[in-house]
Image 1 (tube, rainbow, N blue to C red):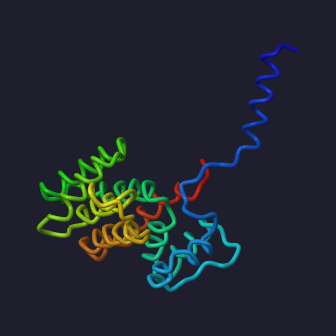
Image 2 (image 1 turned 30 degrees about the vertical axis):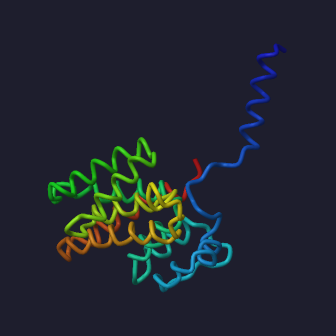
Image 3 (image 1 turned 90 degrees about the vertical axis):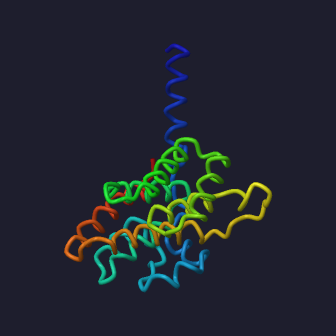
Length: 201
């Protein structure tokens, strides 16, 4: 056997033993609920002790309050992953956005590719001074609070619940703008977009 064969076999073994990557804050929903006290205040259902994230997501989706699947997803994902998901949800209805909302969404799109502090602060400043707190503006606030200091001259960390709360508000308020007979369809789409967050990659 050649050394290349051994190297290949070694790499294959390393792939087997490497833990799967995940975009979630915690391994299980029960850990999330016990660590982030803001979340239990916002949902009626609670995860079972050994329930997996995707199982709980589907259980929320099938409940009498399926909007809680949005809330759970916003809190479950790491901030940057949650922002990406929220952006993808809002992008579905971009044709209804005002020029200001379109500008904010374009800034968020840039930040998802280049998530540096300069872009983050620029988006946060735009969102903070926006005349209307639209879904896009709430997504801008979510970006601003997604990590690092609260301002260029203020290293104070942002509370962990701020980004998921803003994402939750952005998505649910975008649903509230739709005709009542369309909301369940769009909610199902948004939850479908969240499913990959709960799968290892």
